[in-house]
Length: 141
Image (cartoon, rainbow, N blue to C red; front, side, top):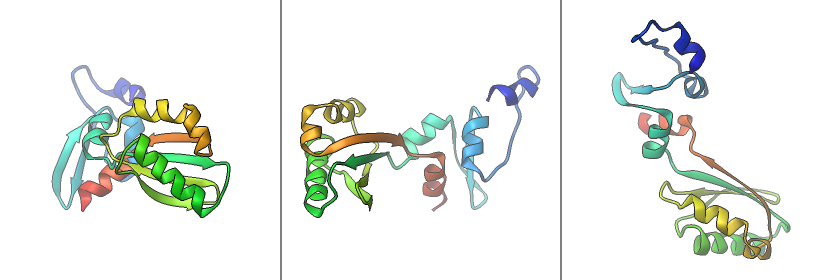
């Protein structure tokens, strides 16, 4: 953002066109998404992610890799974080869970730093917000 802005005249703007959402996320202060020749939305990155993103991705690493552990984990997340949690992918001891936009972020951290998380066999976690790529794909449909 700052580098690109330094080239704009006072009170002016620079328009960049790209299909690379990572590039737009890093270089732009406001983003417009065009799909099928129509302007779909314009706003800051955070505005777009908050209003059009799919939500959050919770990555959990487990101490054990078995079907019972995975089922228990999903029930734990649904009961303690959000009832609409859904498993996106499973790979060995790593489970990716989709959480909706309205999830309480504080609740995620409180739950996953509690003793009950260790009892649910969670030894590590990572939370990330929808990407601009997710927003672009959702608006392009």
